[in-house]
Image (cartoon, rainbow, N blue to C red):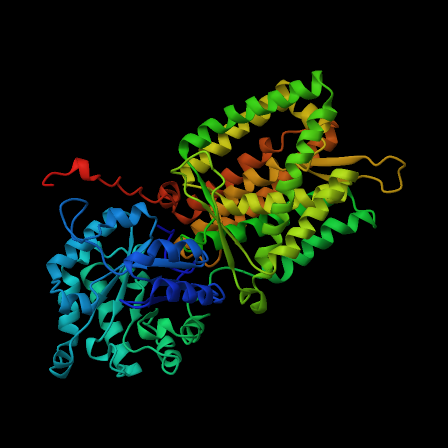
Amino acid sequence: GGKGPATMGGGRRMIVGGNWKCNLTKAKAMDLVEQLNGLDCGDVEVVVAPVFLHLTAVQAQLKRAVSVAAQNCSFAGMGAYTGDVSAEHLANLEVPWVILGHSERRSHFREDDAMLATKLQHALDAGLRVIFCVGEQKEERERGETNAVVRRQLEGVAKLLDPTRVVVAYEPVWAIGTGLVATPAQAQETHKAIRSWLAQAVSPETAEAMRIQYGGSVSAKNCNDLAGLPDVDGFLVGGASLKPEFADIVESCKGRGGQFGPFMVDVLAYPALVGLATIPAVVPVHPYLNMLVISTVIVYMGCHRALAQAAATPGEAVAETVSKKDAMNFPLHGSAVLFGLYMVVKFINKEYVNMLIAVYFFALGAGAVVQAVRQPLQAIPAVRKLKTHVWNIKWQFWSKDAPPEKLEFNGLDVPLLAIGLAISVVYVSTKHWLLANTLAICFSLCTIEMLSLGSFQIGCILMVALFAYDIFWVFGTEVMVTVAKGIDAPIKLLFPKDLAAEKLQFSLLGLGDIVIPGIFVALMLRFDAKQKLHGLPYFRSNLVAYLLGLCATVAVMHFFEAAQPALLYLVPACLGAAFLCAASRGELKELWAFTEEADAPPKAETEETKKGK
């Protein structure tokens, strides 16, 4: 599952579902996939539901920005249920969504409220996300029973209505496939009634966060009026999802979900970072000032990129979450690698290790450049409309069971990859400090963006463990300094001291002193987002603390003229800022309990574990 349906901080993210029903041959379904791969989803979550037989084929060729859903699932798990498909089957195929309670299932297949409650429970237990449909017949509306019918359909599942995993779809049955459509006033009245019932029957928080779609002959002609209603959070589209007008329906939902935080990062920060990184190559800039400013800007930008990852749909997100075990083992693994590199640098010709590292960073650097540059360019509408091509590559050819990896690219990625490869080639050939910094900055941005701490407690464990790690290897041994100076690779930022010198001398800052605090500051930004704190108190206090900690590092390093473990100052600064901010706001309990880890779905039972075959 994802990390929540809401845009970060109040506005519910619009969601558009395309229910293909029992339509399309496989060939026509794949033609539709080709069209969807050119769809600009923007800030809208898009889900399409092909027939069961086409699910895997559609999912394999569909870009990650569009998720797939099953149109139904069984009321039970695996077992002697001929013709059924269980939620566990869908989860095993990594199908993230399922539609339940559609009026056609209720009427044609006699699925009642009790059965649908059982289905919903099974789907959630299997780790699926659910679009749960409700709605009244024409006769019920004419008798004024709309709200009573919808309440009855929801009452049996009230305790299951988790807005991070369930979307409610209101579909007036009399409007489905008939050409009739509820007026904006009728739709808003019913959606508001559903939200009011949720506030009373479940909780005000659930009511505020729950996304409620409208479904019923939605088309390009009526979608704009409906999308503007305050309690309509998107659409469940039937016949129009098979037509080009589906793109118009998605377009009508863009920019309506609200947005959180200062996102001028895309407008100002990237040009600023380019200038800060290149100006010292032509104009003398004090290395300490350069270090302080560039590092803080990288952390700021990386944090906002990480926030975008947190709001991404499951298929789009690329972030990896650090577990408690990972956090505790990281210093041990890091120490083993560090000491191994030290032995090579100390007792073997370091040119050999530099040659191996150069080959490694050649490919890695090109990828980092593509990932770092691609994200801000996605803000350009013309770029978002580029068609996405999908390749499925089975690189683990030695394993029959290994699934293929999905590789996505568009017309922008090819020139970006060429630029990234060119930078890597020139860097490997010349080892120019400016190119090394370019790669190092890209690595830092991507790592902060794609590495997520699972919880505040894990963040504390990692920071404290690396605090001890840094002190031991810098103060207790010569290992850290020897490796940092001996390895010529973009694992550090270089700041020239005197451009006029015959041989340039540099101050340096390891990427770990940017990335490790950076992922913690990013965690604080996501805490601000989850708590809907528009003043960003935790993020801003931590960013200032990071800058002050770096200033302390530079001051002590300059005064004593000796290398300093930056984490010695950065860890207390960032952790202290978080705890002080929480204490001053009376939120220590909430901060300590903050987690982004989703509960793992239970393992699906196999047929052999079931009885009654």
